[in-house]
Amino acid sequence: MAPDTRTGQLWSSVLTTLEGDARIPPSLRGFLDLVEPQGVMGSVLYLEVPNDLTRDMLEQRLRVPITDSLVDNAVDIASFKIVVNLELEREEPLPDVIDDPTAEPVVSPIPSFEREPSEQSSRRVDSRLNPKYVFDNFVIGGSNRFAHAAALAVAETPAKAYNPLFIYGDSGLGKTHLLHAIGHYAEGMYPGIRVRYVSSEEFTNDFINSIANNLNQSFQQRYREVDVLLIDDIQFLRGKESTQEAFFHTFNTLHDHNKQVVITSDVAPKLLQGFEARMVSRFEWGLITDVTAPDLETRIAILRKKAEAERIQIPPEVLSVIADKVQSNIRELEGTLIRVTAFASLNRLPVTMDLAQTVLKDLFSFDEEAVVSPSDIISHTAAYFRLTVEDLHGSSRSQTIALARQIAMYLCREMTSMSLPKIGQLFGNRDHTTVMYANKKIEKLIQERRSVYTQVTELTSRIRQQQR
Ligand SMILES: Nc1ncnc2c1ncn2[C@@H]1O[C@H](COP(=O)(O)OP(=O)(O)OP(=O)(O)O)[C@@H](O)[C@H]1O
Image 1: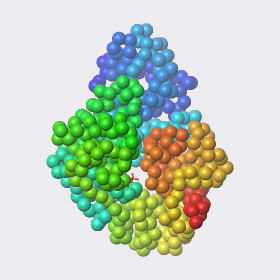
Image 2: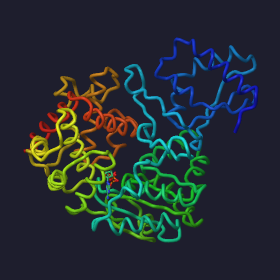
Image 3: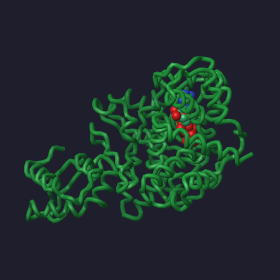
Image 4: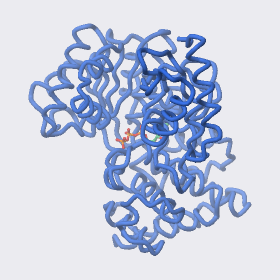
């Protein structure tokens, strides 16, 4: 909606005043650019923003300067209200506030650097779908052929093929990738289709917030007025009775109205513990399919595809040796490829068999099957950086602590099967998007900074060594 002239003018005067406001740190200024003024009602100015993060920043960190500026610029306006509109088309990447030690450790739901350029400008983006997870780059093999076919069928004809579609399997085997791929494909096939991706932890938080803020109706609208609901890692609703109840009603409403539901989980419906029988029976209404660990050929094909996507030349025998080493988790498989290519680029060496063997020896000189616990990762990381465990859990934004914390989060994601929200909880109840950001950031730094590569590699060895 275009603002009326007065609202538009008012907001630009507010922005002009704020330009000279020393209370606003540079890292927060970018959030102001994401605001769309909508109109004035009574003495309230209504603003629209594209995501929860921007709303939180404006409400928590910029409320006072904005209100002061409003009062300065319009005698009859006393406050502002913010509405999140996920549909707002955005070309600007969200501001990156992580590197600023004074800034809040929060990030966008999908960090801007993950978006393809075409995603940023030419079409409406559902910011909940990760543009990297599409069918085109999903490698099909015996371990996932059925799940892939079912996912594609559902994406082609939502609510006609299988409803619900239930995909289960161990961590890092492509369930989330398939969920997002369904969303993208359906959006491409049916312009205007309403797709919503949500992890079950986000669903839970959303539900709890809706109760706390008396927003049950908008919660219901958010989840019931969609054509395709993609819900990830349903096992995390275990034992949460009220949230399960809310999901049960959402599910029924969607199903009754011929809307597609796709669910992922770490185990088959029958093995889900802490779920009511009526829920489980609904999960079994449609099609249940699993993803298992890929065989060697599929692992090599996944590595080849990843190398092509990153435009890295890697000899086939190197791909084979990596695929041979990492067998049961595709996330770890990709992580290992990154370590090998990072080592080569940091040392300005070509990726050869010898080089790969050296890196793999460092990474896998210990028992890979040993179970690594997050507390081991945290205590080792703290000791390595001469910090305390509390530093990593806490909120200090000193650069050393922030980097150590991000490395610990990265290692938790790589070495354990914990979900992003669980890792966030572990590190002082941080949002899952913060963990997602930390992951991407460390993955990038490993390839760009020798110091970070060495720190992560040494830490990995120490943690593994302890498991012996
Ligand atoms: N068949 C595949 N082809 C290409 N990449 C894949 C495939 N399967 C998984 N991946 C990649 O492996 C990584 C982990 O996959 P994903 O996050 O979908 O796993 P998951 O099963 O949802 O794990 P979790 O239960 O821990 O969330 C992602 O980067 C994904 O793109």
